[in-house]
Image (tube, rainbow, N blue to C red; front, side):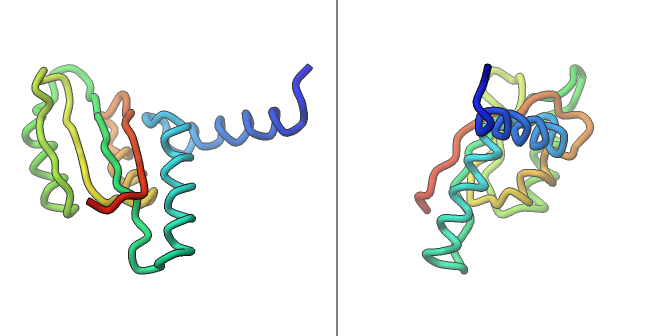
Length: 118
């Protein structure tokens, strides 16, 4: 039998997954946690540094996706060296990540987030 706090956490993770389906819930939670911490320190610099590895459905033109993201966000974007997705890196809020992940061609998003501003 799991504890009430464990059940609450599992329920929260499921809700995050329904809101941003392609992203790993723990990554989304980490981005939100870091963003909250940064807002307390400096409200004007509250975006965490995020690296995302984005995979798409078969047959998608990756360079077109990279160009669209570069036009919309001030982040680095490139096709992965294995040509199986794109890599995004830069300061991103959870809202930015959610907007990026709303592309219906995306199948999976994973990555890392930290509080350093490179």
